Length: 346
Image 1 (tube, rainbow, N blue to C red):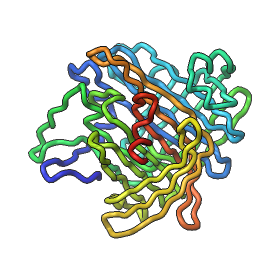
Image 2 (image 1 turned 120 degrees about the vertical axis):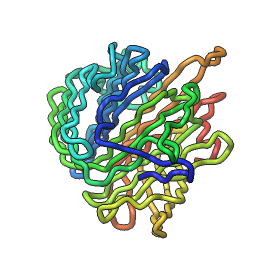
Image 3 (image 1 turned 180 degrees about the horizontal axis):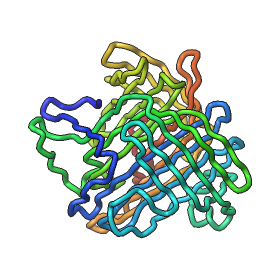
């Protein structure tokens, strides 16, 4: 469970695995995200569907990191009419048993990028690369307790949220095992590995946070981490996350991430120092194996063009003698051509 302020607590129930009433907020978002990596094949991917029922569309992303460095990727905004299910654009999430077993399937097409950085210009990427049939069938089994939930007041009453400034009113995560297969074109890849899943709901604009660094990783069935550093909008950062070990979560109290960069200001590696509430310390290094840059853009109510960049790095991690795999997901608002997280020193 995530740490809460003294006047805030978190609640989470099995029914939260299913869709909620979206209410009236135009930008209500209810999403599930999964990643899975096979350590033997050094491949895997991530999959996200976010319903925006009051805007009548879903955000659907499928991203597969192939062993040779290519990336198979698709993004779509299929029309939806309600928030009854996370099932759109060929991507479907089935909750078989809350908190224990979920199935992820996708049937459709994916753009196969020999140079994943091409996605910095989506129009040219789609013109210059071919699409192939893509199939995903993965079973996710929970290995850890649940982390997070819906933040509420100490008396259980909901916390007031400004939809214009909200990223999510509720969020939880879980380390998982993943089994199944991924097919791209005529290449079939059995998957046996580990990953992390999350769910969020509530009003969301991708521009509500100046920047964040989100690094989920697994070193095996009984050891994983999620490192989180989020810009606070005042020049500082909130540090958090958790270490999964010996069947429990040990919450992170301090987390420093130092990143390496290429000429595009994309992360190529990182070093992290972590200290937990139980007094344990960890040193982690990460090497980005493959990265795809994505973006989200909208106009603010006063007409300002807002540009959010999210660089999704498939990353090999080391902690002591252990080697694991996961993601380094870096979100930055781009202002005057600069990524705000890098300006802040992360």
